[in-house]
Image (cartoon, rainbow, N blue to C red; front, side):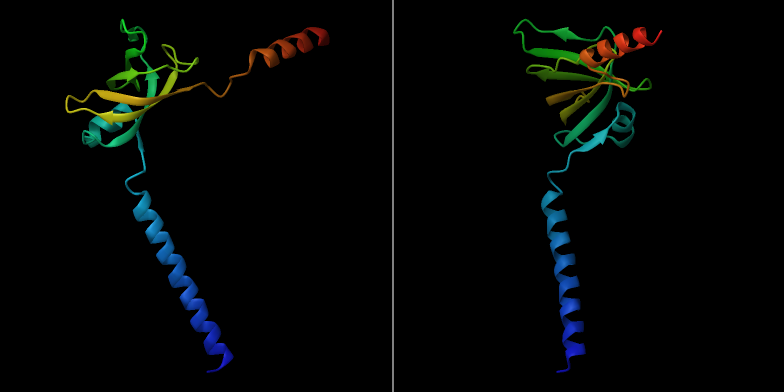
Length: 144
């Protein structure tokens, strides 16, 4: 067999191996992927109960209710068009508060409420640690 034919066969085998590996990886991750929904997307797409998803939006003002056990919390996630009630049992992040962004990882229930396993609080892109903000304030006052 000529060297040119050997290279062509090796190249084709490499392509087949790469495509096969990609298909195997995608099929393995299919069940592990958590999709992101806003409340409007979740209502529109009728997310099936029990499927692991991420629900993102803003914590509606006046919606946070803490239970007597000290670790269970109910709140409402909104995207200013639709709302979804959420229940979480655990310790929430320091940035979690009414009017702030949140991503809740968990599952929808048959009654269209959401039970979160994990809460990720988001801050806006203008966030600045207090130490840096204080230094910038001092620098601005020195310039004047």
